[in-house]
Image 1: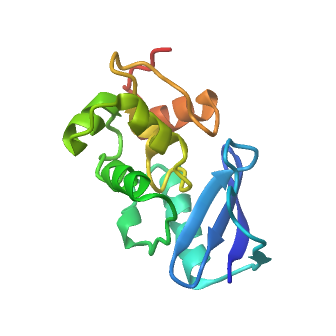
Image 2: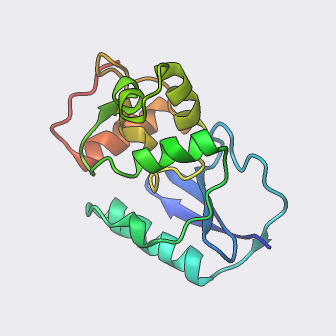
Image 3: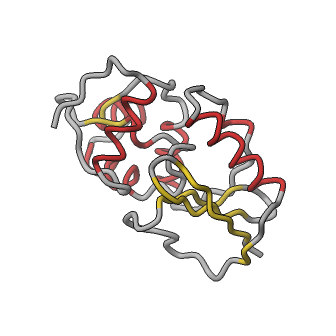
Length: 164
Protein backbone atom coordinates (compact mmCIF):
# COMPACT_ATOMS: atom_id res chain seq x y z
CA UNK A 1 0.00 0.00 0.00
CA UNK A 2 1.26 3.46 -0.90
CA UNK A 3 0.29 6.73 0.74
CA UNK A 4 0.60 10.21 -0.70
CA UNK A 5 0.40 13.79 0.43
CA UNK A 6 1.24 17.10 -1.19
CA UNK A 7 3.90 19.20 0.52
CA UNK A 8 3.82 22.91 -0.33
CA UNK A 9 7.43 24.05 -0.73
CA UNK A 10 8.71 27.53 -1.67
CA UNK A 11 9.51 25.98 -5.08
CA UNK A 12 6.01 24.65 -5.63
CA UNK A 13 4.05 21.56 -4.67
CA UNK A 14 5.90 18.31 -4.01
CA UNK A 15 4.34 14.88 -4.12
CA UNK A 16 5.48 12.79 -1.14
CA UNK A 17 4.78 9.05 -1.43
CA UNK A 18 5.44 6.48 1.28
CA UNK A 19 4.99 2.78 1.87
CA UNK A 20 4.71 1.18 5.28
CA UNK A 21 8.54 0.77 5.16
CA UNK A 22 9.57 4.31 4.32
CA UNK A 23 9.48 7.25 1.94
CA UNK A 24 9.35 6.07 -1.68
CA UNK A 25 9.47 9.41 -3.45
CA UNK A 26 9.56 13.19 -3.18
CA UNK A 27 9.00 14.87 -6.52
CA UNK A 28 8.34 18.42 -7.58
CA UNK A 29 5.10 18.38 -9.53
CA UNK A 30 5.82 18.15 -13.23
CA UNK A 31 9.45 17.10 -12.89
CA UNK A 32 10.97 14.48 -15.17
CA UNK A 33 10.22 10.92 -13.98
CA UNK A 34 7.39 12.25 -11.74
CA UNK A 35 6.06 9.29 -9.73
CA UNK A 36 7.58 6.94 -12.33
CA UNK A 37 6.70 3.29 -11.84
CA UNK A 38 4.28 3.85 -9.00
CA UNK A 39 0.87 2.33 -8.79
CA UNK A 40 -2.01 4.31 -7.38
CA UNK A 41 -1.40 5.79 -3.95
CA UNK A 42 -4.04 6.62 -1.35
CA UNK A 43 -4.15 10.28 -0.35
CA UNK A 44 -3.64 10.79 3.37
CA UNK A 45 -3.42 13.94 5.39
CA UNK A 46 -1.02 12.23 7.73
CA UNK A 47 1.09 9.16 8.32
CA UNK A 48 4.20 8.90 10.50
CA UNK A 49 6.54 8.70 7.49
CA UNK A 50 4.84 11.46 5.50
CA UNK A 51 4.68 13.64 8.63
CA UNK A 52 8.42 13.14 9.31
CA UNK A 53 9.31 13.91 5.67
CA UNK A 54 7.20 17.09 5.78
CA UNK A 55 8.77 18.14 9.09
CA UNK A 56 12.31 17.67 7.73
CA UNK A 57 11.50 19.52 4.51
CA UNK A 58 10.05 22.41 6.53
CA UNK A 59 13.30 22.56 8.52
CA UNK A 60 15.29 22.49 5.27
CA UNK A 61 13.30 25.30 3.66
CA UNK A 62 13.56 27.39 6.84
CA UNK A 63 17.35 27.48 6.36
CA UNK A 64 18.47 24.55 8.48
CA UNK A 65 20.31 21.46 7.22
CA UNK A 66 18.26 18.66 8.80
CA UNK A 67 19.55 15.12 9.10
CA UNK A 68 17.50 13.32 6.48
CA UNK A 69 19.12 10.02 7.52
CA UNK A 70 16.62 9.83 10.38
CA UNK A 71 13.86 9.34 7.79
CA UNK A 72 13.03 5.74 6.83
CA UNK A 73 13.40 5.27 3.07
CA UNK A 74 11.95 2.68 0.72
CA UNK A 75 13.92 3.84 -2.31
CA UNK A 76 13.34 1.73 -5.40
CA UNK A 77 15.82 1.32 -8.19
CA UNK A 78 18.47 -0.93 -9.67
CA UNK A 79 21.44 -2.03 -7.58
CA UNK A 80 23.61 0.49 -9.43
CA UNK A 81 21.14 3.34 -8.88
CA UNK A 82 20.90 2.47 -5.19
CA UNK A 83 24.70 2.59 -4.90
CA UNK A 84 24.80 6.04 -6.52
CA UNK A 85 21.91 7.31 -4.37
CA UNK A 86 23.67 6.14 -1.20
CA UNK A 87 26.72 8.11 -2.32
CA UNK A 88 24.58 11.22 -2.86
CA UNK A 89 23.40 10.98 0.73
CA UNK A 90 26.99 11.53 1.90
CA UNK A 91 27.34 14.95 0.24
CA UNK A 92 27.23 17.55 3.04
CA UNK A 93 24.66 20.31 2.94
CA UNK A 94 26.04 23.39 1.18
CA UNK A 95 28.73 21.48 -0.70
CA UNK A 96 28.93 20.06 -4.21
CA UNK A 97 30.69 17.21 -5.99
CA UNK A 98 31.07 16.28 -9.64
CA UNK A 99 29.74 13.29 -11.53
CA UNK A 100 33.37 12.32 -12.11
CA UNK A 101 34.16 12.37 -8.39
CA UNK A 102 31.23 10.05 -7.69
CA UNK A 103 32.33 7.75 -10.53
CA UNK A 104 35.88 7.65 -9.15
CA UNK A 105 34.66 7.00 -5.59
CA UNK A 106 32.52 4.11 -6.84
CA UNK A 107 35.22 2.75 -9.16
CA UNK A 108 33.07 3.36 -12.25
CA UNK A 109 34.57 4.49 -15.56
CA UNK A 110 31.60 6.51 -16.78
CA UNK A 111 30.43 9.82 -15.36
CA UNK A 112 27.53 9.52 -17.81
CA UNK A 113 26.32 6.34 -16.07
CA UNK A 114 26.43 8.26 -12.80
CA UNK A 115 24.45 11.07 -14.42
CA UNK A 116 21.76 8.64 -15.53
CA UNK A 117 21.34 7.31 -12.00
CA UNK A 118 21.44 10.79 -10.46
CA UNK A 119 18.75 11.99 -12.87
CA UNK A 120 16.40 9.19 -11.85
CA UNK A 121 16.68 9.88 -8.13
CA UNK A 122 13.10 9.69 -6.80
CA UNK A 123 13.80 11.63 -3.59
CA UNK A 124 14.43 15.27 -4.49
CA UNK A 125 16.26 17.22 -1.76
CA UNK A 126 16.20 14.22 0.64
CA UNK A 127 18.74 12.41 -1.55
CA UNK A 128 20.53 15.58 -2.68
CA UNK A 129 21.12 15.10 -6.39
CA UNK A 130 21.06 18.92 -6.80
CA UNK A 131 24.55 18.97 -5.24
CA UNK A 132 26.14 17.25 -8.26
CA UNK A 133 27.81 19.36 -10.95
CA UNK A 134 29.72 18.74 -14.18
CA UNK A 135 33.47 18.12 -14.14
CA UNK A 136 34.03 21.86 -14.71
CA UNK A 137 31.75 22.78 -11.80
CA UNK A 138 28.94 23.80 -14.12
CA UNK A 139 25.24 23.14 -13.81
CA UNK A 140 23.88 20.28 -15.80
CA UNK A 141 20.36 18.93 -15.99
CA UNK A 142 18.10 18.62 -12.98
CA UNK A 143 14.86 16.65 -13.21
CA UNK A 144 13.03 19.43 -11.34
CA UNK A 145 14.43 22.15 -13.63
CA UNK A 146 17.68 24.12 -13.52
CA UNK A 147 16.03 27.11 -11.83
CA UNK A 148 15.17 24.86 -8.87
CA UNK A 149 18.71 23.45 -8.77
CA UNK A 150 20.14 26.99 -8.66
CA UNK A 151 17.69 27.98 -5.92
CA UNK A 152 18.53 24.89 -3.82
CA UNK A 153 22.29 25.37 -4.15
CA UNK A 154 22.09 29.06 -3.22
CA UNK A 155 19.64 28.29 -0.40
CA UNK A 156 22.17 25.91 1.14
CA UNK A 157 25.20 28.10 0.49
CA UNK A 158 24.66 31.71 -0.65
CA UNK A 159 28.39 31.93 -1.51
CA UNK A 160 28.20 29.06 -4.02
CA UNK A 161 29.26 30.08 -7.49
CA UNK A 162 26.68 28.84 -9.99
CA UNK A 163 27.97 28.49 -13.57
CA UNK A 164 25.88 27.42 -16.53
